Amino acid sequence: GENVEQHPSTLSVQEGDSAVIKCTYSDSASNYFPWYKQELGKGPQLIIDIRSNVGEKKDQRIAVTLNKTAKHFSLHITETQPEDSAVYFCAATGANYGGSQGNLIFGKGTKLSVKP
Amino acid sequence: ETGVTQTPRHLVMGMTNKKSLKCEQHLGHNAMYWYKQSAKKPLELMFVYSLEERVENNSVPSRFSPECPNSSHLFLHLHTLQPEDSALYLCASSQEADSLGSYEQYFGPGTRLTVT
Image (cartoon, rainbow over all chains, first blue to last red; front, side, top):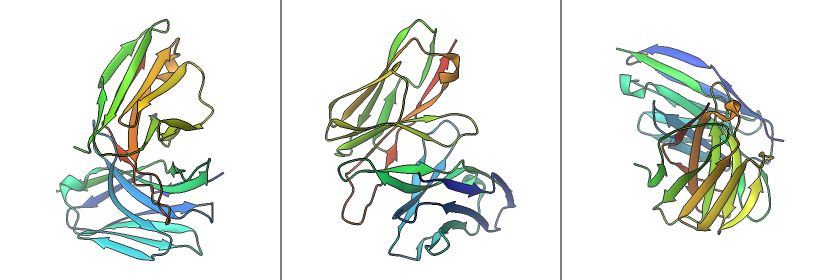
């Protein structure tokens, strides 16, 4: 089945620097790749996503890139701020289990700390 | 707020108790999910309901019993749990996948469960 590897597990940056989190996936049929941010005491919040027909997507300080050939995708956060500190999860669609639904396979998460 | 609410937020139960977790979504979605989040492990998909029918049961022990009475509500009934079942239980909802395979899932804040 699908396997998603995420690196690094922890990342510490200075405020204003950029942060990059990388994920690889194993199922070449995966076609949807969301990124979630989880703050302490809250559920994961979708921050950006990308589909397999697009190579890059940007939303203000956040961007995601996808390399289908290499089966990896990355989250880029520029001009980091202390409020960016959280755990970030990548995910990729796995095999369908009937109907039109596919499930999401998640990476283990990256704890990002942005120091003022 | 994501439009997905969960109650209770915290639950402590003994191994012989029976309790239920509740999830409600106000987004007009027709698919709902239960996930288990344990420390240092990826989010684990437990159950998927699409149009109130269970379409995925990811090898979850029978001591966890889901119920989806309508597209807005999802329950997880718990009985005779084990200490290793202590975790954060997250509910999510989404529309069904479209032709491009979009699976934008929106999570609730979770129920922190402790089994003593």
